[in-house]
Amino acid sequence: MPLIEVYEWQHSAACTGLDSSVFFSPSAERGAAKHLREQGAKAVCARCPVVHECREHALSVREPYGVWGGLTVEEREQLQRVPKAG
Ligand code: SF4
Image 1 (cartoon, rainbow, N blue to C red):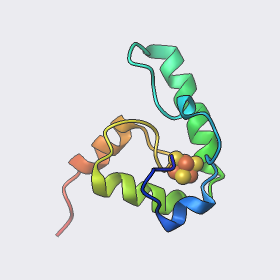
Image 2: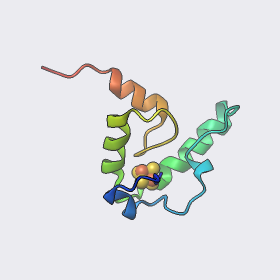
Image 3: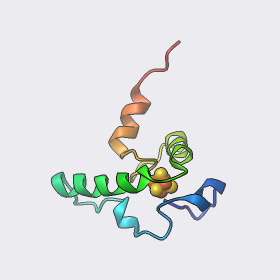
């Protein structure tokens, strides 16, 4: 989702102008409703030309909420738990 602080890649974001409720969950959201909303957000991300930049940003700053770069909060946490090889 676009931030107030502008990053160059956000000018090309597929989510520009969309309601943020597509990407961020209401506090009481659970189960099927959460899954459906996340799938909708991921569908937008899947056609986004800056999905890689968005994902890298979200991982680097450990965004705690919302779908970013096609990844949910849980998916980002999972990736950040995987130890780096080497
Ligand atoms: S990857 Fe998804 S959240 Fe990120 S800018 Fe694109 S549409 Fe928005």
